[in-house]
Length: 310
Image (cartoon, rainbow, N blue to C red; front, side, top):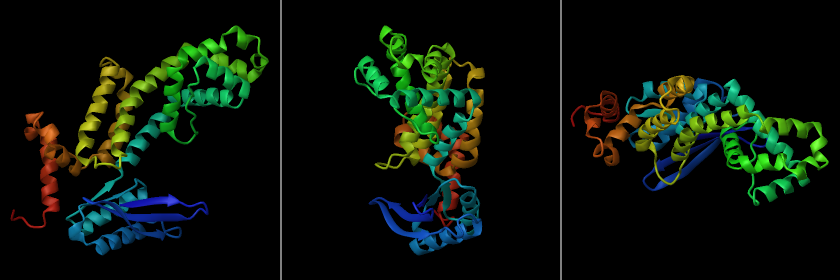
């Protein structure tokens, strides 16, 4: 596994790790600031690491979804036909969420949610008033760059919908000095808009199932490879059910999911893991005749088994 990150001094560093039945172990770290953006250099780094570990010991190489890694992964699979390159599942789901967050209707509502929490937490008196109304429960605060934290923000706002609306329409608020401020008037106008709350409900229905998938694949306690295929199917089924099978309400979301899933995350290893997972295989015997799943299983067998003699 390779984990790329940027240091405080703006250097691009890559941590190389291995995962095995004993757990995940750190192997080495390198400074890749001078050549990280080229696919050839990225390929050389990853290929050298595989050589160091031993190709016979490697099932897959996992990295982020950067374009240089995607191209380097293709070069690696071409050179070493008995292993897989797989993009990080958590990063892929995160990119799906980021794409959803760019939908104009959703992006506008997220900005409003950030504006609401920002106003409350930047005014001590307003914050104390909110805490009195919510019985000391806090609102999650989001940054502008991470959609997942924005989702947690709107989820917490929705949980406190009645308390927040009650506060901003109470006599205590109307008589306060903050009620006369222009920013406060905009916030009050916003939370009284039915469209604000309707969009929040829409986001919760769409994003909630995907966040559950993200938590599954980002869990370090146990591998998620044999659950990813099923988790994505269940997420889509949950979205369909949330909108009572009204395809018009979620078709654009499914287009975003499918583009990322098909080209980056949907790998034969996921299908094979699903097939070999007793939890699913014995619950649904039709798996054995599912063309997509069995094709993934056979593709894995052909790639991972060096010899045709089994």
